[in-house]
Length: 377
Ligand code: SF4
Ligand code: SF4
Ligand code: SF4
Image (cartoon, rainbow, N blue to C red; front, side):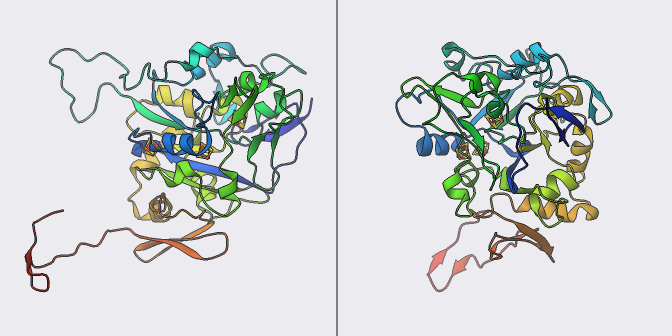
């Protein structure tokens, strides 16, 4: 079986599909610490792409609560039960990926959800990691925790959905790495639904075909960020391109945050698919849980995030300030004085965000308008 390098687990994997890396790769960074679970992203995607018949339980974007929430039901713990806990030696994965668990020439290890698994999207939402006793109050450090996890298709480097499809109806685009389902070729075998470890392929029972996040490719082709990114109320998201040909670029915000500074990490890297959604981990959550979810780099990422205001991290903070600052894909960024500046793929400046918001003090009585101002902040 062909092998290919996987930089996220620091070793090659067996991957049953031949394909060169794309020219460049769409990638996303989500700052988990800032998500408020308003679900605006979910609604923006749903109204744009999946409001038709047979798509009632289809959520290309969903936001769930960890440790107990999940859509479809227990999508991650059911797979983890099958492949076992991740084992690492420093930053190299020792345990087997989903492509290796069942042996050579076998489809990726997976499971297929039933209709019932999609019917209770709110089970486990907003539940804490432990019971709160009567009379107990939260001090500065919470004894119990939860966090919101926004999820879309990862447009993986080694997509399990692509590897599993006997019809070759799922494919990865060379120009941007977006993974799509060819609706004409799909015969509804649902091997992709079973194989995707993130359960981000959905079966449309009316169309009798699989459907998945399209990466908002019509927008990406125009140099615009995805709808779920543009609509994000908490400005937790950045969307752009990761460099696949050559070394990561210091002036590319996605490369800088993920590859160079390693502030954001892939979700369940032990699955082996090389996901391209990266998460700034929640700093209030214990390492033991996060080690399984984000891998061994999580403690360093949390420390870095806590020290984000240090002078040596000013460029990194500048990159974070550009989250949600433009509906254009930011290809290049720099810090200029007190501002973070972003340029799109055409070289046009599309964002300029100050490190410190200016404050304006105006007289209480506005002579020009003849009006008194109330003291608002
Ligand atoms: S997250 Fe799932 S559906 Fe998306 S590319 Fe990866 S394997 Fe395929
Ligand atoms: S990238 Fe587009 S299609 Fe995919 S989840 Fe976001 S809004 Fe939906
Ligand atoms: S819109 Fe942003 S803040 Fe709101 S739930 Fe989605 S990712 Fe979280």
